[in-house]
Image 1 (cartoon, rainbow, N blue to C red):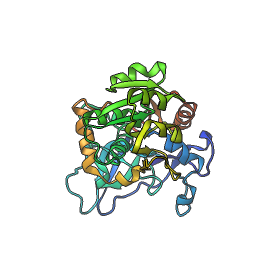
Image 2 (cartoon, rainbow, N blue to C red; image 1 turned 60 degrees about the horizontal axis):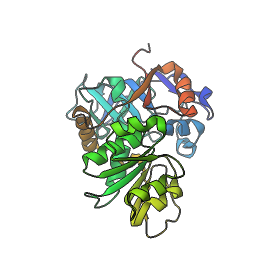
Image 3 (cartoon, helix red, strand yellow; image 1 turned 90 degrees about the horizontal axis):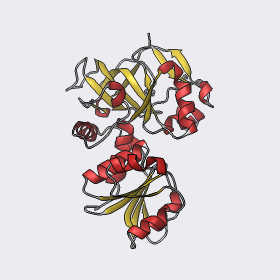
Length: 315
């Protein structure tokens, strides 16, 4: 089978097509014939060597990719509920397993859910990892019923899903946006929109003088958002955090890998897409053999929606 990966770490140019053996599913696993694999910022970090210590026990080429959508191709022992031909999407826990940038990927059955009926397989590939990240971020904030949260990076994939889920959960949502993204973020359901940047915290405090109950920091502004949070409130960074927090603010650094086998939550996400609560946003579909171009585009910034690699057309 064809796999897009790297034998060394570096810039987009290290990505290439490789012929590798097709994997077989073991007990509790399914094999998916991948049609689409989303390109996420974590894939760029993977390619640059961020996960190199975890990959030392693996044999190159190393395939990035945490989102896959396609068709069940084979089912391992002790798997029920899946048949060959089912349309599915999955979160792929790279680098613990070979990533989604491949014609075939084997994942635990617990990482799989049916694709939303309303989406193509390429569109569905943009959903699992970012939507599960949003769900985990909100689940990390305890006892937030009827509360108010602020979301940075709301125009991005994880931030956008967070806005939509928070509204569905009954929360009041303050979201940031640059001028060109205001209408997009408004369409996601934010109650209030503040400018993205250095004045975020001050703008939030102008709306909520006592501070919001929590901030989901998808834009990685870290300490700059602390003034927006009430005393004893909550800070959820999406890229990790181990520093101090002021005024009793509780940090909840998250890793989506902790939800990588939460198929029930992924099924709920699929239903929310079909119900019109969540919006899958695909910026472009790129041939898998041009993955390096997709990485270059994402690295330049400004992409709204996900770039998706097309593996269905590879022969």
